[in-house]
Image 1 (cartoon, rainbow, N blue to C red):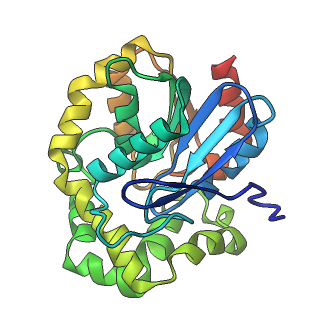
Image 2: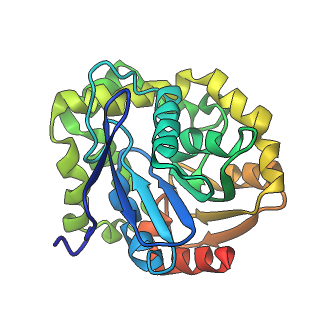
Length: 280
């Protein structure tokens, strides 16, 4: 048994490919939607701590982690959101708390914004729901999504080797052993271009998807929402948290001063405590 990730391997066949997922514990369902360039491994601390009282479900998005990498899948936000919707429907999740991080926000939040939504509560961890083109981080996103970024993704594994460590509040918390667990699923150069760089491009090209999110985001005013934010995130700055506060003025907000983009990796006990209080 893997002590870091001691979960049973499960796979669901979807119309676009095979999706690996974790399904641990019993009780109210918590659905964890990971970001890029990670996989369900990023939620291991939360799953181990919360599965004693909740059913914790954490899929690997197609192309990520232990899920398949179908060559014909477009790896856009819209395609990932559709695959996630199919997964939730096939698994029969009728009511659940949605937990999203990074690009898990743009692909997971649509689940909470449809009529008759099955989502009862939402937890947001350093994420966004608006066009990157309208954000100060747009210039960096354009570079990453362009030809030079493609080369960096392919030959330098830039997303995992450069961007991920730089987004930690304290790089020492990304130990070599844990970093290796993220690196091991993207050793193939072509896979990094197929999945990671394709998504980097899509993050800038999905204006209609983002606009659809913004147009319906007021739906969340009727739901309990918790925002947990690492303030030392080099990618998602305080102005993005301020935007969430404006869009969701009733949301509970917990900030972690010394955490960066992965608060649930960098300060798991504080994130777990915040989620437990929110769920009670």
